[in-house]
Amino acid sequence: MGALTALGIAALATLAIPLAVRRMIDLGFGADAGVQINRYFLAVLGVVAVLALASAARYYLVTTIGERVVADLRAAVFARIVSLDAGFFDSARAGEIGSRLTADTVQIKSAVGSSASVALRNLVLLIGAAAMMVITSPSLSALILIAIPLVMLPLFGFGRAVRKRSRLAQDKLADATAFAVEAIGAVRTVQAMTAEDAAKTRFGGAVEQAFDAARDATRARAFLTAIAIFLAFACVVLILWSGAQRVLANEMTAGTLGQFVLYSVFAAGALGALAEVWGEVSQTAGAAERIIELLQVEPAIKAPTLPLVLPAKPRGEVKFEHVTYAYPSRRDVNVLSDVSFAAAPGERIAIVGPSGGGKSTLFHLLLRFDDPQAGRILFDGIEIAKADPREVRRNIALVPQEPAIFAASIADNIRYGRPGASDAEVKVAAETALVDEFVVNLSEGYDTQVGERGVTLSGGQRQRLAIARAVLRDAPVLLLDEATSALDAESEALVQKALERIMEGRTSLVIAHRLATVQSADRIVVLQKGRVAEEGTHAKLSASGRLYSRLAALQFGAH
Image 1 (cartoon, rainbow, N blue to C red):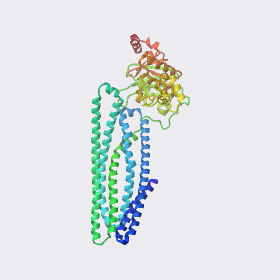
Image 2: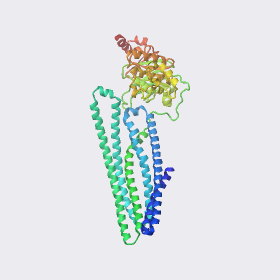
Image 3: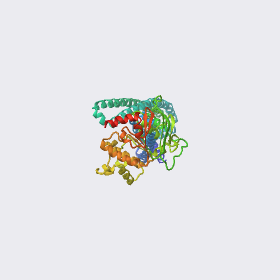
Image 4: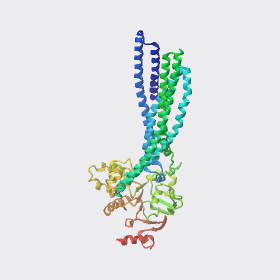
């Protein structure tokens, strides 16, 4: 409301100026007119002061509204992104998504903020000037009505071309951004392979494509602006000539013509400004389309309309019943086929087998990143497909093979396990995971920044941070996915010690290639080509003469 009020005051102040000009011209510049002219100029000066203050207020209020809209839009886009299922991210590129969240919203910010302010001002000024033109001279205004379609039609025609080219420019920029994010994220690999020149060439090519597309969009927008401004001011020239003929014929006064010309200049200027804004809006439409596409994506995995409620005190019982699963991109090849096994509350189950046998996919499905094509997965007797996936995940703690470490402090990284945890709880979790053993040697302790992806930490230290998160989460089910496979012997011993602590009293599913780490499991499930090949204790399976026995002979024989 404040913005509209300021806009109205600014428009009225602008439209009042030609009235003073008319009176001044018609009054003449004789000696006896000096006092009146002084009064008019003082009045115009007051109007200009009001115009300046109202314009500043209008700009501030409208721009602030634009900033608020874009901030809410960014929050909505990010909220939608983090709610999407894992399958979406399997095909999407992080850099391209980041481009939509940043570059596209910046484009929209420009249109909703400053451009919206300019558009509102000039739209009101155009309407007001047109009304005053009709009041000043209906006959000359009729010429304007004839000319308006000649000005507006090119705007709409070229606007579509600008929008199409702008969408292409945003897509090309997103491609360049996506590659840059990938290359920067793997910069050590790029340097190790001496692939800097290849990376520069590829990124340079992507940037050039983005530049060419942006130049085409700018060329179309510039052409649109030139046509609109030429047509608008050509109308002013035509009307000025027609008005001059009427003054010569004594059909109107010079002051009236001056007033009409000023209003027509206001109207033409407003129309030209609207043409520029329309070009920017058309350019923004391409960015808006990309944002809308993202907002319209529906997650494949979401809570049912009436989800079943998990027990208030979960026991941590997990069951796979005849589960069959194939990746969405390859439905003809099963990763898991008719898999069935159960883990009782507090039981420690090891899952072993050759690479590609479907071990990690079990965790993928238990966390409900996707649903199996057949069979059921139960948590405490409740089918997880009928429960809220967020509730299921709250009862599971995951320690992956390659933990995600964020560019934050050690304490903040641990707190990802439970965002509301206190500093004392974070330190207890850190001590349980043996994080405190290396934190004591850091000058800033738990406030030490670890760099992007934990670049300042060793592999064992990053792994212990992930374990500390799992401790802090305090979930009844613990998933360990090759948690020690990438570590040296000393780090593995420390991490294994920390893992032993947190597995106590929890249902633990452990994936491991090193059979020495699973000998103490209550039961071992052997997966081969997506099927359960064997199940039993280490001693029983070692004596079976089957797959596990051969794997054990290979590994332990090597020692």
